[in-house]
Image (spheres, helix red, strand yellow):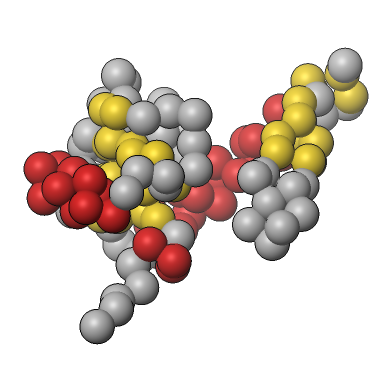
Length: 117
């Protein structure tokens, strides 16, 4: 399907609020998402040569083949490497993975970094 904004695609969440959500996007909305992501990196004054690691719900896991932080920076600015780990990995494995990866930046959900006594 096509609109004036390019190809229409769907995206879905697992439902962190107990209600899964399906959204529609277009080429333009993906471009706007990339622009906002890049702006946020710049606002935070991140060093693009650093390593970015993510622990999140995603289909991808491992080291990104293009050695870039992802869609928000790809083809716009050269970055250091990035790696992703699935959120469903147990806490001990997440901790070991983080030590092995030694990231400069971590992208994850607040529930992952909650400290317990």
